[in-house]
Length: 302
Image 1 (tube, rainbow, N blue to C red):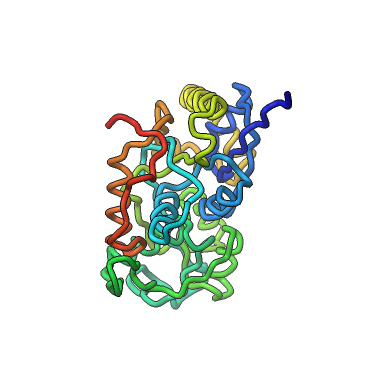
Image 2: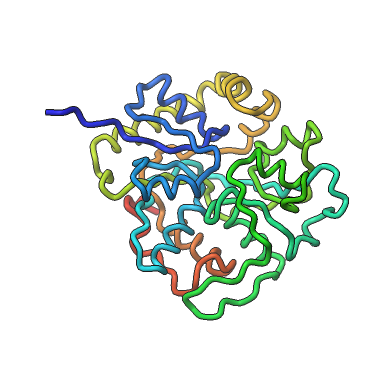
C-alpha cells in the first residue's frame, strides 16, 4: 500500500512560528511546513484549493472567512480545530516615514488602507478600527456587511505595504507591532497608533477531511511539545528569532514578555468564536445574519 503523505501546514514565518519550528526541529513533527508571508488570507485560498491541509493563522481572518462563506451558502474549506496563542495581538498602525500628511489615527477616515489581501487580518482589523471611531456606514440589509470606510489597496506582502506608504500608493497599513518595530527603528516607516484584538490572537484550522485523522492528532501533540520546549528554552527562542527571522534580540526578548501560547492546542472554545463573531458583526465585517454553527471542528471545554 502507498504510504500516507504528510500533512501540509501553512504558517506565517514570523516570531509566533517559533514553537512550530521547535516541534519540527526537536520532535520530528511529521508534516511539511509551507510559509505564507502574506498571511491568513492567502492560507484561506490555499485551504480551499487543497494546497494545504492545516493553517496556523489569525483568529479574525479565520472567523471572517467562515462567516463570509456561510453568508454565501458556500463551503469555507476549513474548520477551527485548535488554539495556538491565548494572548491578544497588538496591531500597529503605520505610515511612511516622511508622510507629513498622515499624523494620527483620527485623520484616517476615507484614506487608502493597505492590506495584504481581502479577508486577511490586516483587512478585518481595519473595520474593527473604523468601528471604534464610529466611521462605519450601516449595512443596507441584515445579511450584508458595512461599506468600507477606507479605499482598500491589496498589496500581498509586508515589504510591499512598507513601500506603498512611502510612495503614496497607500496612506497607512496595520501589521503586528514587533514585526513592524525594526522598520520604525531604521526609519523606513513611522508608527501613528495601535489597536489590540479583543480575542486570543492565533488559532489552528484544518480541512474537514483531515479532522480526526491520526496524522492531525499527532501534529497537535507534537506542537504541544514544541510550545513546552519554547517555554523552557527561551534563550534558544531568542537566538532563533534574532538570527533566522527579521527581529533584533532585544525585540524578541520584549515580545516574549507579552505572549502566552496555549498549554494544549487541541480544540477551540466556542465562546471565543461567539465573541469574535459579535465584534465582527458590530464592525460590519460580517452581516447580522452570521452564525457560529459549523465553524468549529473540535470543541474545547470552557
